[in-house]
Length: 115
Length: 113
Image 1 (tube, each protein chain N blue to C red):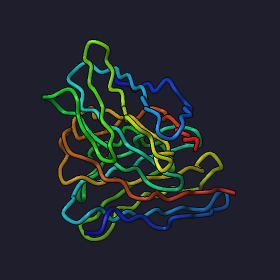
Image 2: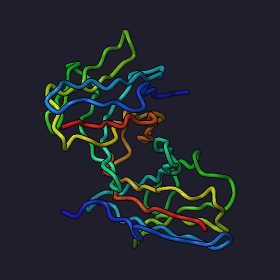
Image 3: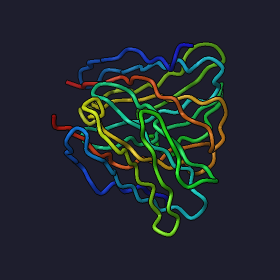
């Protein structure tokens, strides 16, 4: 079984451009989570989605960031008008349900560099 | 609000020596606790988890962790470290319903040969 897939693995953008990060959950998983890891820090929760629904976006910056998980296709984390402070590793995780007892399986991450 | 503290930023041990990585949590209800390992440039791999029951849990790669409610701790241990264990280790707690994870800042483990 394929694990959680993320692409691209590395993304370079200039300030003001848009970044689109994609995440395909494990087969059979309908819950997706996005986390951000800044240099020298742990992972910070950003958003939790189910198919076609945002369940919890309490960790998302109020502006420029959005996420979706359509009925078909991967989950997308979109960052508009990127700034240097957006440079980080973005990890996606998936789980079969939204229970606290679920294990979240992480993808390899997308490392975003903003020039 | 829930939080996780990993007081040791860096730890260096000799190969074959024992290891203990500390983790303290702050959470009002029964915590669900996890340890993940991250190798350089990689994603996170689950080592073990605690939900209830026996407070000593066994994980992969010879790791174990003990939940101590009185100390709000969930320390990770390994009796004999291998050079391939060098990585960053994260403790996390599941909170808020829906399985949102709150992570500690991580402990970087270096293994000397």
